[in-house]
Length: 71
Image (spheres, rainbow, N blue to C red):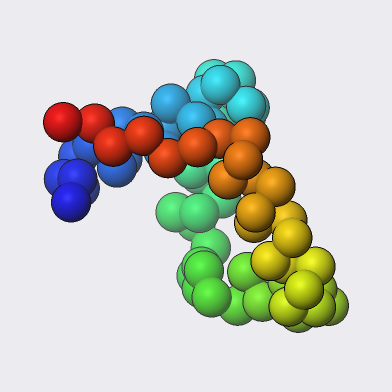
């Protein structure tokens, strides 16, 4: 299992790569400012997605980005 610091580092790096510095800062500010419920947020994104569609998307994602365990 990776440490909390490593997961935070990886998360920030992903945000920076995809959003850039300014948008990453905005994202963090919104998360910190709002009473944020991750589960509700994800439900809003995935409630209308069927289990087969979700599974197919997950399989396609894992094929594009295979998990490589760092030692």
